[in-house]
Image 1 (tube, rainbow, N blue to C red):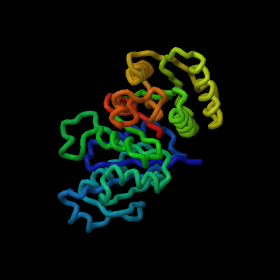
Image 2 (cartoon, one colour):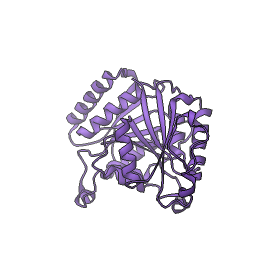
Image 3 (tube, rainbow, N blue to C red):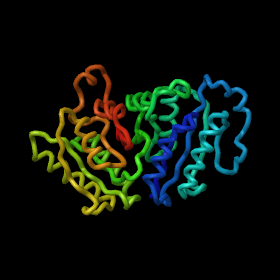
Image 4 (cartoon, rainbow, N blue to C red):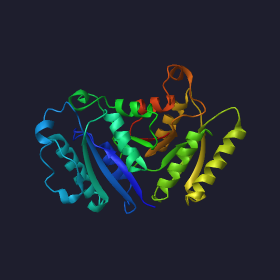
Amino acid sequence: MSLHFLVSISSDTENLNGVRFFSSFFQESEGCSITLFHITRLDSSDSSAALMEMWKNPEEGVEGKLTTGAYKALNRARRHLRSDNIKIENMKTKTVQERYGKVRDILSEGSAGLYDAIILGRRATYALQWIFDRPGDEIPQAIIQEATLTSPLWVCTEPEEGRKNVLLCVDGSASSMRAVDHVGFVLSHTPQHRITVFQVSSSNNMNVQKNFEETDKILAKHGIPRERIQHREGSGLSVSGAILAEKNRGKYAAVAIGLEGNQEGGALGALGIKGGTAVTLINKISKASLWICP
């Protein structure tokens, strides 16, 4: 079964981190297809005029109408993907005008298209954030708070050259086991990457070993051999801190977590904000993508 990803593209032509990560992670893209998705903002200065003009080459699989900013950003994204040997027939471009707000429009498309993951680029710098769009982490922060999020969300910062493999964080929760299933499915298509199953140390070592065994069984169902898997325990003042420390140590390309783990709660939970570890990691992660599974 092939993989199908939704990549959200803003009008900021410098913010193509989702596209860059996809290109660097999937060196062999035969089993992947990608939809580049652009939402034209209601307050876009050139939307009323430019929405009257169709893409110049509709035969290349473009749905919708484009503003000038959308044309530039999508065209650059397509050129980047094609330069990395991703076939044009595996790419689709879709544009819509904002209807319910960017967050809900992305989630609506993600649900309708049955994508394996929604990919967002997060800016490494905030200097120009208000010129182009919202703050770099506002969209992913809002998405993970939506009850309608059903697809895994990949939040991508500028990828660092040479990084590979996936840090798969588990704690025995249903959400983290769904992350295991997602990682197993994706990495069954990418044999060049290994998986490190990581759990922050607890007082109950029996539970840690049980989680590792359960993870191995799920990964095996996706055809991931045991030699591609290693187990690690970590510790730190916080779960997010331990994850970030291990991410830096192992130079992983991606970190996968469940949205709501067994250790969630605390001040953020009291405020009605779910996924405290995910919220923190979205703010702090760099050089690697963050895969969040609801």
